[in-house]
Image 1: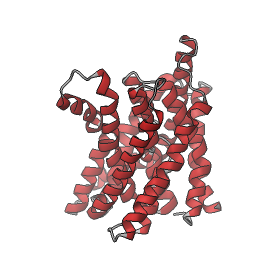
Image 2: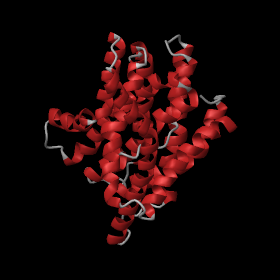
Image 3: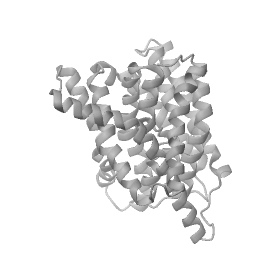
Image 4: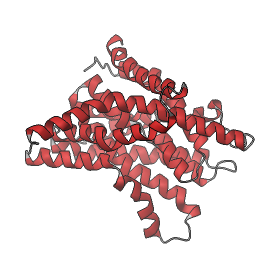
Length: 330
């Protein structure tokens, strides 16, 4: 456990530093979008490219891993929508609740923490989860969210709207470019490789710091919105705790069960890859879901509080799960 905590404590501490820096106004709120853009468009794509270029193409396109993770993600989306949809939670908010419960923070937090904890071999399975979450899980949830508001649009238009975000995201393209380099045996020229290396090295600390700042901003905006509407949309931590627990407990348990069944019937899934997929599913909710919720007019306060609760609780739940798997540290 000490080896695990030596990795997880600094990671979550950097998230806390970003949160406190934003809350105390040491870092102005106006600086958060620029910090987020640096990570999203420069540092993180470079890190993903380097991992993609150094990962055998078979690990990135493993059909069994893709199938297991997709089945678990879509199963969790369906379960969450069924459990939360009702008179007080309409389809749009149920869809975003499902997205925040099924989409782990595998980009900003998962990739650097998993490789630090387990080693570079964890990069392939984590990138598989990124591709599935961006192109399949998020698209399904956005399509559900738009079903009522955009019911007048043809199916093709609704699908294009749902896929617009994932296609514009540089992360999957960085993975794809890295996979191309891996398959073709290509390498970057020396100076360009050094630039990519420097940007990739900045990804981990800046991304974790940014998560904290984004969490503060999302929570602050949600608080102000609730105050402006006399608390009509206020969602306390107690109210959103079930969604956070679905993210941290049900998601990894469901994935582990599906993966174990796949191994039992002889599918090409190793226990190591199943462990990485399960630990990735046990990560807290992706901080970017709050931005999507705000953009689509969903209950941002509810989503932000789920992200906040899952991030706080994940320090204990994720560390405990890694210990249960016998992880010794990378």
